[in-house]
Image 1 (spheres, rainbow, N blue to C red):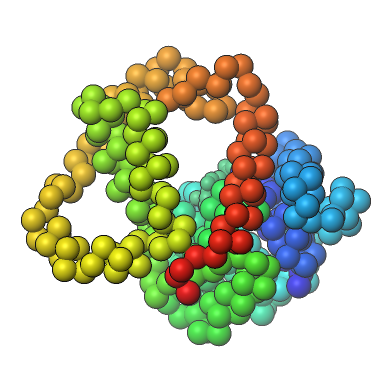
Image 2: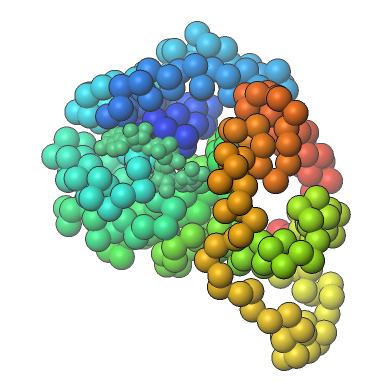
Amino acid sequence: MQVAVLGAGLMGHALALVHALGGCRVRLTDTHAPTLARAPSLMSAALATLREAGETPHDDAWLARTITTHADLGETLEGAELVVEAITEDPDAKRALFAAVDGLAPADAIIASNTSYLDPFPLIPEARQHRAAIAHWYTPPYLVDLVDIVAGPSCDPTIPLALRDLYAGMGKRPIVMRKFVPGFIANRIQAVVSMELYALLDDGVADAAEIDAAVIHGLSLRMPLLGHMMKADFTGLTLTQKALATAMVPPPPQRKASTTIDALIAEGATGVASGRGFYDYGGRTPADLFAERDRKLLALKRALRDIGSMVP
Ligand SMILES: NC(=O)c1ccc[n+]([C@@H]2O[C@H](COP(=O)([O-])OP(=O)(O)OC[C@H]3O[C@@H](n4cnc5c(N)ncnc54)[C@H](O)[C@@H]3O)[C@@H](O)[C@H]2O)c1
């Protein structure tokens, strides 16, 4: 399959790699020349992590043959059967790009937007609506398997299924949602969890490391096996029903900010990229930290593959 990936930023370059690893030929573009120029080295670094872990035999020569970069949008879209939109989360930018795609892409190309919160469908020209969908990925998409697929309001119903089959065939775990909601499922859960955890932190209930211990050793351990719904079945739905009725925990406060995060940012501690956030990374480079995260995520995925989830 010929794929055009539009946007080569954090998500775009990684999505180009994912589609190439899945057997597609990929053309990648970005309007910001330095971002496009940097994409091959970022893809090469991610590919090296996968190769060293034995997940792929492919090397840089394969990468250069399979993914080409193009400054010109028309050239990027030549022969595209699938257009993956991964540009800035800005409605005007996306609207202008979709209008340009309408004039340049093959008539039967599928358009798949990687939008996070914006509803892209009102931004897509009428002529393209019947083949327009969302395929929303998580970072890094070469390691996180979930893909949220949502059909546009007048989309041909075969399109989300075709995307589901394409990505399932690449070893991903696509889910087909019945309608668009900003943040999809996983990010909405994460948003609610974040509100509660930052409130606990700001209120001095526990420090960041203790909160993480509760997340890792309590909340998360059962999730890869049972998800949330099956965990409720194991708890028993009568207890779940009672817990809901007693509102044991009130809904998280809608503070829309965290005093702890505001204070860290004011000190320049913005997370891994600055060497310090909730944790101090002891002078380690972001590249080193991301590589360790990727190696460990791969090892965890392997273990989970061997163990198998109980959820079908
Ligand atoms: N960052 C994430 O974790 C994440 C996860 C899922 C989805 N998304 C979504 O993916 C999209 C891209 O996010 P990102 O994090 O990669 O952003 P980013 O800022 O890293 O990259 C966006 C890129 O789009 C380029 N661009 C802007 N207008 C363009 C145009 N008309 N044509 C070609 N390129 C153009 C920019 O130059 C930039 O390099 C957004 O819609 C975002 O919401 C992001």
